[in-house]
Each structure stands twice: as C-alpha cells, then as structure tokens.
Length: 455
Image (cartoon, rainbow, N blue to C red; front, side):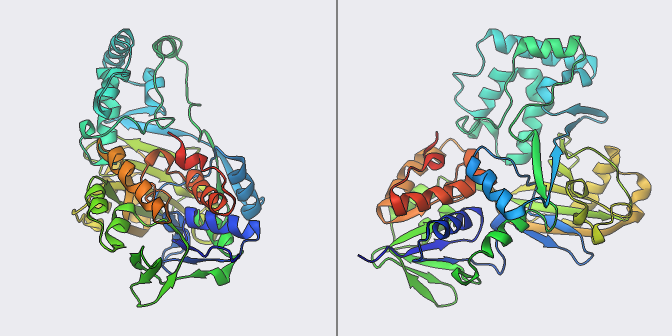
C-alpha cells in the first residue's frame, strides 16, 4: 500500500518540526510549501543594511520538552550563548522593579507598596480569582487592585490591544506568576529579591544568525523538500488539492497547515459557511518591531524591560546585543550595541514607524536606558511590521476552536502552530515545534498529540 502524501504549509517552527520528524522517521512522501523566500516563520531573523541582526520580536530558547532540547543541541551544538534572565519593569517615571512585578514590590514607592499589599491581602482573603468570568476580573481577584492598576492592567492592555474584560482567563497556565500573600509580605519586610519564577529564568540564544539560525539549519537537512514563494490561495477539500497564488498546486492525502486559522477557513473549497462564521470569533493583533543600532558600548546583564507608561509606545525592549555579540556588525560589542523594541497594534491601524521610533527613543531616555547624547549615536533605525503577532484569547475563542478544529481534522487537515492552533498558551517555539513533531507522529504511527491536546 502506498504511503500517504503529506503536504505541509509553512516552513516555520511547526512546519519544520513536522518535516524534521518525518525525515527522522525515514518517511519520504512529503513536501513543504513556504510563502516567503526564507524559513523560520515569525522565528526568522533579518540583517539590516548596517549589519545588525534583528528577530521578529523577543524570542529566547527555553523548553518543556526533552525532544526539543535535543533538537536544539543537534542544530546549534556549542554555538549558543546561555543567559540568566534579568528582566525589569519600568513603572511610572523612575521605579525599576525586577520581574515578576508582584514578587518584588519593595522596589516601589511606599504608598504604592501599601496599596499593592492591601489589595493582595484582600484578594487572598476573598479566595483569589477562581470564579472570575474574564481576564480582567481574574487579575483583580488574584492580585488585588494595587498590583492590577500599577502593572497588570497597563502592561496587558499594551500587549493585547484588547479590553481585558473581553479576554478569557483560560490561557494563563504558566504565563502569569500568581501570588502568595505571605511571600509578598516577607519579600517587602525582609527586602528580599524574588526573581526566579518561570520557565525562561535561564535561556539560550544562537551565537550566530539570530533565532532564525535554528530553522535555517533544520531546513538544510532536506533542502529539496522545501519550496519557497508558494503562498496558499485555496484548499479544495473534496479533491484534496492545494492551490497557490502563482497558479501552481499539489495534491495531498493529509495536510498540515500552519497558516492562520481564520485565513485557512476562508480558503476552504467548497465554501463552508459554518467554518467562516466560526473563524469570525478569532481575533489577533499585529506587531511593529523597532530596532536601534548604536555606535556605543552598552555593558549590561539586563535582558529585557517591560513598560507600563502610556507615553512609551512599546511594551518591551530587549538588549539584543546582550543575547549574542554577533547581533551587531562584526560581532564588535566594544563599538556597537542594539536595542529591540516591540509595539502591538490593532488590525486596521497603520502606525508610522519613523514617528514611533522617535517616541521610543524619547521613552528610553526617560527610562535612563539611553542618554540624551545617544541620539547622535544611532546608526541604524530599523522597523518591520509583523502581521499576526498575538492570537488573542478572547471570550469566544474556545467556542470557535471547538467548531473549527474537529471539522478540519475530518477533512484531513491538521491546523497546528501558533496561529494554526490559535492558542497563545501553546504558542512558544518549543510548543510550536512539538506540535509539528507530534502531528507527524500521529499521521505516520498514530502517536498522541500531547501538546495540541493539552488544556
């Protein structure tokens, strides 16, 4: 019996994860189609005209999965930098608070400390946010009014560009550090730092080529299997055939799609109104990546900084030259440094990158991350718009997915990845690669899809 023909849409972490696993299994009847001329999806990297390397947002390598760890070791070997996470929140004009905010309240002005502690005590006494109906109520119920207003509300509003009461609380898992009131109080009274929370407290970064180096090396294992410049236009589920915008196409027995799920639902032929209606319940935002390449040495242990200030357009700034010296021209961190900032914006908005860059520089100077004189040391002003940045966990998301995913699977389509699954809580690189690996295992040998099925 002939093996099933597997077509993979997208050479990002999920698509390449599936491809790598199929290749590893010795399964040969598969092909990858990628719309761009590069691999890596949103985990690719770019070099600007001045020789600075930029990722498409803040990516670091950490993992929940031994398979992913082994894969990274195979792809990068010793060509990695390991870092201890040092991240901070800039709150107000001059308060720098170590991450996570709620565990390090001692860095705040006394009046804000008191408000945060009283709110946290009240929240603890009321049993936390267990019965909350949305993310805003969960935040108030879990952290209390002080922490919510000082950090959680302004920061999350910047990231999600969505009213928090319109977001579900189902995505939180290990994404948000919850509170232990006794521990918060002890941290303040004993002036104790508490910075080790979270799966990315230690992380790796490729020594050369940015995050995209991982995926370029994966793709090098099977170059003949990857076809670039193939933007998906239509999926004929009756004939099991994909068509691309350049007029070409291919047939499949099984399709692994990493295309955004809302777009995929509109490409299905014959038209399926039920899928299109469900897809209308999926929301996302976009990202503006802003890079500042400086002719200046910045010596720091800091990794990334969060901002709550509404005058600062970005929600996060990364000391990108700290991740690897090779992110600056010639690897010369004695001479150069780089800061990468991220700003979420709503679908339909068109921010002016040059104007936003000016505002970002002003904000970095206010935060004392740059000096006024550094304006003259900026040698690269980089920007890139990233469509589809965050799959927003709205209140209607899970209902939409309950319709879309089983219907697609019935048609032989595995919709996987950050925007194929549309679940932010399994949207990291490790999750995304493993969704591809496990889809391949499932198709070839009936293996379980543990990541995709996780709640």
